[in-house]
Length: 499
Ligand code: NAP
Image 1: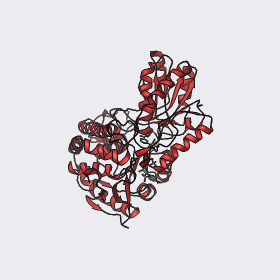
Image 2: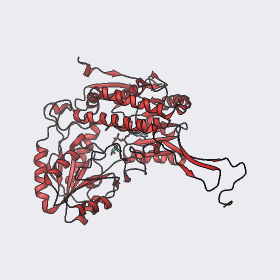
Image 3: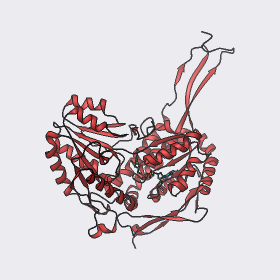
Image 4: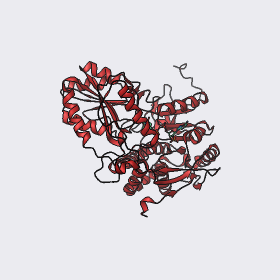
């Protein structure tokens, strides 16, 4: 048996110790390319385990909070350098655990490395403001303070990158963390936390609770010791978390789904647009919050664009992401496979025409995993469910439009607002799109995927509740501003009165 197929049995990480669930239950993580293959066995935690983790984090908080920012930054930097050293090993584990092809798994780890370096660099930046007071002999300034113990809940589609977007800024700001990763990718999360430990993070500052959303995630959100929740995942779960946090007046930041579109204008470089659509729609088997699941194409180039796209899709190779030359890996699990095919049936019933794909792929070795043929729908109207709802699979819908006005209206006609793109050679068209596309992220002549960590990441409308990750604003989610006035006049000075 090669090292790659050894089953890892792991415990929760609580106060630096490895612990089983209090009731001894476990669950498995399996390879979606060969679902008979068990990758890991981890605790199926409940409220008792969550409570133990929150207590461990609360114990570790005072020491961590007092650790100077640059020292905290150095630990994060060391974690980034360890991620760099282990990039290949982590990428291979990721491909086995959630299926994305190896080249993309390496990119996922790289995003974590970039984030570590970027956040570590912020540890010596001047965060607060020193501003003039309206009164003499008075000093006025601001500083960031940690929130306390924060709960972090993440999805499986970026099993290293997304946790680093949350963990690194939360830690730099001086918080302690209880982390509930997705049930489909527990081992990637564990490896990341082990790296933080190896980098010198004191025990208890980050604790992992493995488990299922309602059993482990929800008690974490509700726990009175959790000051804030940072969540990335679907709209229904985000809404649920928001409903729990609302009456508790608990801060929660939600990064949710998308129904992203690429607009292709008639004057675009069509070859470039087809390249972008292929990568945007089928990268990570379409399982990205920024996936290009709508292609809004000006009718004058509709046939030319669609024919070229379908020809390229027909050459995509499906398979185990560890195999050289494979372009598209499996989808995450059986439930998601059924859901994706359900949308194909919905699309057909609504009058959409499947140009290619539209089936579960089960020939040969593909039958051992959860594979879906890359699918392109034509004759789609903007109001159809396949043009409105997030499918989260390798399915994209071509929507014809007549004009730029029409294209912008269709692109904006969704409850989501994460990522929108437009291909054109006309500068005026590009700048109108930049101004009028309703999304947190806009691309010109590039697909809807490919965000870089030095800019804010997040969406408007139902994609979130107004927060951003990454960029210089990364710390906002995980810190409070404190305003400080120091009066050294030796007499009472009354603001707004002693003018
Ligand atoms: P999900 O089903 O919402 O799950 C996300 C996380 O929440 C998982 O850890 C899940 O645990 C947990 N969870 C489930 N129910 C919960 C509950 N009642 N209370 C607390 N936690 C709960 O999403 P997913 O299927 O993992 O990920 C796909 C979704 O994430 C898509 O909608 C995608 O667009 C979105 N996403 C958004 C971004 C962004 O930045 N905007 C980035 C990536 C993905 P289990 O694993 O046990 O279910």
